[in-house]
Image (cartoon, rainbow, N blue to C red; front, top):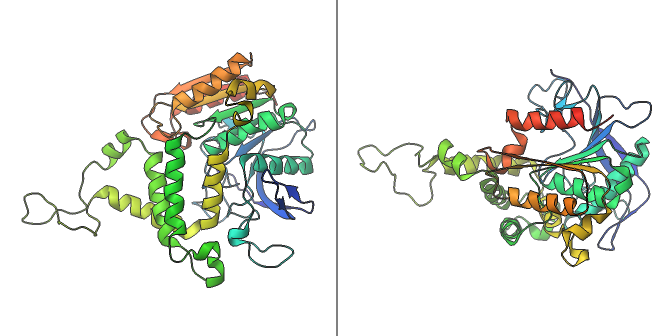
Length: 378
């Protein structure tokens, strides 16, 4: 069932003090809502987005038939998160490039485009900004906070920063922090961007250029980590775009042209990404991913960190997700159980890798539906 939505924007005049000690001057957040807030204001579900997603979680924009939200298979009337019961809110985070104040906007005091001067942000900063938005909407407590990947980290942080404002946290394909391998992938992607001659130290807006080469490579690196080995081999294998005629190997024997199907696919993804995503936003968000580590302030003890949490939890992981493996979700489960919190956990045997949290796996959607129907009260 298709339903139409419109984005909204809310401006905040009061500065936001960030984890770094910097102060975010007046800013705006773009958001969307789905469903109806009940009289008790008790049926709100906040959806936190991942790296390259936005506030546009579900529904379509009128007159744009191919504009479905990034989690439209999950959220809507009669879906797993049923907007006939829940009032769902999607927020575009500070520093993103889909409407909320970010590096491509002007500083309200100087009038100069922020660029590389935009403050460094953390997951905790995003949660604080989201809490301000909920205050403005008159919502004191969430029925649930929900997110996948980086969005799942925000959901976890909600339970620690505002434990009395969350009744349920649903964390999908996420982790309590990034391991060294994940930080390494992020750093290589960032190096691709900052070494692009068109980056200009982050002030490329002033030069009317975009560091597309760096963005393309960053997206190609990231996309490799989102897919499983099984999916890549099944979908692409060693297939060639076109075999060389009269050559027994089929190879063109070239070092620079696209020859394999997987090369073509990655370049397509990179080209598409570089047309819509902001380079400084990519740097900000991947660094926020790197910094997230709620156990750091507790000597690395995750169970001690989660002693603050009060809500019920649902965690979901996917068997072939090697970037946010099931092992990482089980670490969170164990930390919560050690604090005698109520936890549900589902490990889905799915071939799709990290991308599985966005796809139409019936078992996954049924698990989510069951939890929201039986556990999350409106």
